[in-house]
Amino acid sequence: MDNTALLLARIQFGVTLTYHFLFVALTLGLSVLIAMMETLYVRTGDQLYKAMARFWGQLFLINYAVAIVTGLVNEFQFGMNWAEYSRFVGSVFGPPLAFEALTAFFVESVAIGIWVYGWDKLSRRAHLAAIWLVALAANYSAFWILSANSFMQHPAGFAFRNGRLELADLGALINNPYLAYQYSHTVLSGLVTAGFFIMAVSAYYLLRGKYPAIFRRSFGIGLRWALVATVLVVGTGHFYNQYIARVQPMKMAASEALWESAVPAPFVVFALIDEDKRQNSYQVTLPAGLSVLAYNAVNTPVSGMNDLEREFVARFGHGDYIPPVTLLFWSFRGMVAIGLWLLVLAALSAWYWRKNEIEAHPPLLQAIMWSLPLPYAAVTAGWLMAEAGRQPWLVYGLLLTEEGVSKVVPAASVWASLLTYAGIYAGVALAALFIARKVIRSGPGE
Image (cartoon, rainbow, N blue to C red; front, side):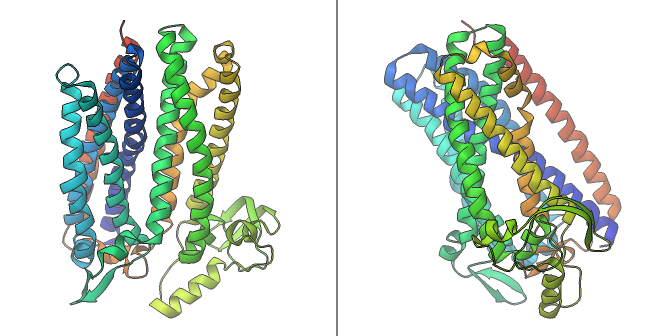
């Protein structure tokens, strides 16, 4: 396949997967929070909690439907645009996806149907069990999907036979240390997204004085989990990055725009990056900051991209092993900035919530409402860090991206599918936003 087709195939998969992941993040967190609301209803008998679960459930179903539709497209691409990748790694990559479909996805799909249609047909506890099955299956599904992705990031549990990789140890695959960091960070990011989603929609109603009994409680539930999850996301993100510094030092160096090895290594706060000359034409640094963040020690050496590439060339042969530095550098800083802003919003909200004064501060409620896109931007930046930072590898250290693309699909075909998917996805997004807006404006009813 020519370079144009390779580029288009990468763009197509990147766009479709990122689009899908936006809906996955909310699914993971919102399913859990709705289950908690219904648990409160079953334990207390308070009809307000039931109304809350049903209202947020409508928005969850819209999100879930789009997540399912967009997720199916990605799997087809493995056999189309990325046939060589599927041939080389399918025996390892396939089993986790099969486990996800045969266990988590089927349970989730059946349970969600029971939950939607069983409000007046099942006992309270049986109906509650259905939504907890949805929540647990959704997060279990993420475990299997991320186990496959973690293998691409840090291969484990495989054997090389007959010119391709085969699964040799399922236990090693699912106990991959990379998976533990990636999964915890992803699930907590879903809770952050769901918490701020609930807070933002609740703020919309509180500013208008509509359904205050329901949306004060909703705001409180969203706030508690947004605050806790944001703190935990920051913590897990720190340990995740320290692990990446050990197993993917090139990704870490690129995200910090560190071209030359240094002892101690500075943390680059701001930089004008010249990727062609492989240097920063201007930068503002915090001395020894990167050494401390990555290794908890001031005088720890950190390898720069130029030295790392020389090591890669000696090990794997001639090539360009430096990922897109500017994209990674600003994605990481954008993610961190958003995380700090959300933490400030959650902390301020918690302060006024405890004083029972949240509605007396409309600017804060408006800030929360207008900040709703930020958790989505943060998870997108994180996903870019994970995937673009692995380049030029599809399977780190084993398969280059250019080697995994199909050799028989011409650029014209990829153009056609890319434009088709872009049009369909745009239509689906507009339809989902229209329906969600209608549900929000209609409210939970009396």
